[in-house]
Amino acid sequence: MRPDISSAIAAVEIASLTKRFGTATAVDALSFTAESGRVTGFLGPNGAGKSTTLRALLGLVRPTSGTATFDGRTYEQLEEPASRVGVVLEDTAFHPGRTGRDHLRVLAAAGGHPDARVDEMLVLVGLADDGGRRVKGYSLGMRQRLAIAAALLGDPSVLILDEPANGLDPPGIRWLRDLVRGQAKEGRAVLVSSHLLAEVAQVVDDVVVIAGGRLRARGTLAEVLGHEGGGAAVRSPDSDRLASLLTAQGAKISRTGPDELLVGGMPAARVGEVAAAERLVLHALGDRSRSLEDAFLELTGEPAAPPPGGPSA
Ligand SMILES: Nc1ncnc2c1ncn2[C@@H]1O[C@H](COP(=O)(O)OP(=O)(O)OP(=O)(O)O)[C@@H](O)[C@H]1O
Ligand SMILES: [Mg+2]
Image (cartoon, rainbow, N blue to C red; front, side, top):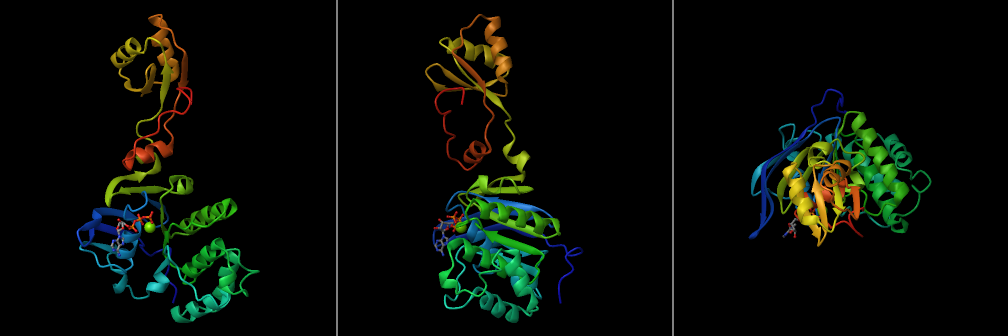
């Protein structure tokens, strides 16, 4: 029986989840949710604890404390987990001698899904012409597509993808984006992890950013990464005076070189006006919007790179 996606409350809830391996804490009192009909990006650098969190959600690692549930139930408590939750983990293993189609057939039989789903899924993931080939001859990207086909076999209401873009080429990444969007549009909760913000920035509705196992930020992409807004970069031989003038006007100044300033919260036009009013010489001036990637790096604890090649960058 297929779940009624439209009425199912398919939210994922991670509540005060902690996972220690020996003395190392991989996940530290982490809480967040993923909602139906939305794509939630689960972001963090390598080793942040993303896979461990997803594995705890799927009952593959036992939490030290806290819970990870689907609509209040653990994975083990779900009545039809294969139809409820579709999963692509990092290390999906396939029987190399089996064809892609046979691989899906075995899973369909095990999960009680109609055999016709197999060919539908091969078409959906762009493997219609390769279903008869042995998986050992598949490229990394083809294996990834096959794993996604397997995850979708049971028409799940929650889709969990751990670093799904690994191995995909640019057209593959675009295809994945469209697929992820489409799955959320049909009402599924899609939780997709990545260590690369750029890979998911275009499709996520909500983001959860973690580093060192801890929550760093959560909210919509704009809420999380849009916070300090734009600013300006300026170079002046009189940078000390300029800095104090701009500070007096409410800007946040950081020095990026002997005569270079990064001006937070003030556009270049206003910086130019302040400088002109005091007849200060400027050697360069430009707007500098904080890129999503800068914001992500700041959030995850690594310092933002100075502007390449001077303040106009
Ligand atoms: N089975 C395990 N035994 C011991 N330590 C583990 C185990 N699994 C994960 N860890 C540790 O937990 C931390 C988080 O790892 P995890 O795989 O969850 O990170 P991740 O965010 O998925 O990283 P990546 O982006 O590299 O996939 C790491 O320090 C890792 O070494
Ligand atoms: Mg991982």
